[in-house]
Image (cartoon, rainbow, N blue to C red; front, top):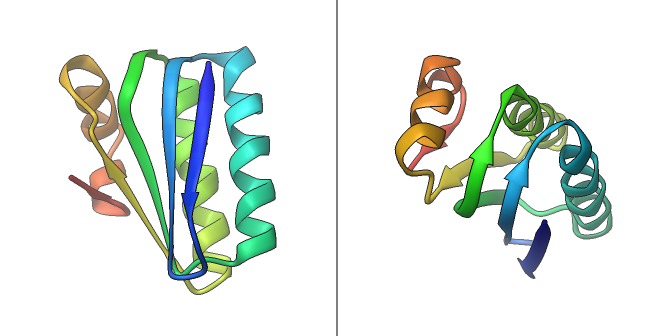
Length: 101
């Protein structure tokens, strides 16, 4: 598991790698939240192209970042989700809250 954060106050992208499960979700959450708190970006993009497995913890990760960005008056997007991971995001209804590209 790894997260590479790139961007500035306009847009911050979190490139996620590995699996998102109960244990790794905390690492991803803490890393992203720390940078969001310090920069206060208008847009946060979660890039799922490097994710190989995700359970419901991934849905929780997206929901939590959605709430954080809403509180800051910002926007959240998800990009790069493929196959089963994309289906999980869509079945959970996240596409009604977050733009999934």
